[in-house]
Length: 180
Image (cartoon, rainbow, N blue to C red):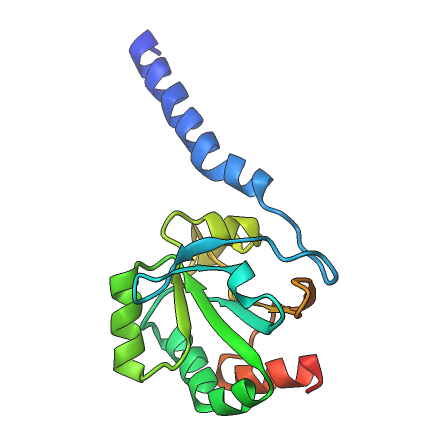
């Protein structure tokens, strides 16, 4: 093997390690009772949002892979259809994906979503919450968002983590798990 070829192989290995392995090692394993990681990002309207904006309120922080895809749309529309009941119980709903503000705005308008969508284009939130991971679809392995919902109480602690999300009935899951 030539020195140049060996150097290129090392560069590719370093790139893989830096961009795939290190983020995996840095992700937190959160559990019930942990303090929810702070965040600061923009929503579909370009407004900067942070967890501390919702201090004293119950927060549903749901992570989904991508705007306007079949399963993500079912989940968002189920929450939309039951949003009044969630809001009446004092619950704030925040959806999070790696999509940008423009994509979120289009998704919000197309499906009349009444809740905030947070843009995480830099993957900071998905890494901090431990939901950016290796996935496999049709034999193809790639990095992506694990569909997960964190129920955060008024004190900023994680009350529940729903990692087996039922997209068509997710709001019912939230109400049932939270017991409200």
